Image (tube, rainbow, N blue to C red; front, top):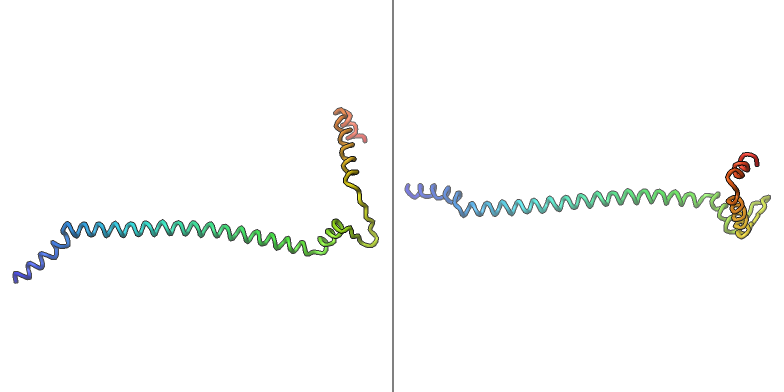
Length: 130
């Protein structure tokens, strides 16, 4: 019976000894560090996911814009406009007029220079009565 008493006394002493206390503290700190690492990694992954979702929405918007542009580029009115501008085509009954860019530049520069040289009352007179 005395051996049984000794076993009962040794088990609580072993649990509450300094060695087991140090072991439990080390185990607790290890678990705490593992949880902290997991939490930090989880936060990084969540922020990366949110950034990627923003990228996805931006790319979907661009995709829709490109689809609308492709749809517009395939319309007959755009094709006709490009044929007229770049190839010089015209419909039957239309007359094509080409004005050289130099002539346009001369007209714009000439009229602006005269207008700039005028006095302010003269400009108002032209504005209301011309």
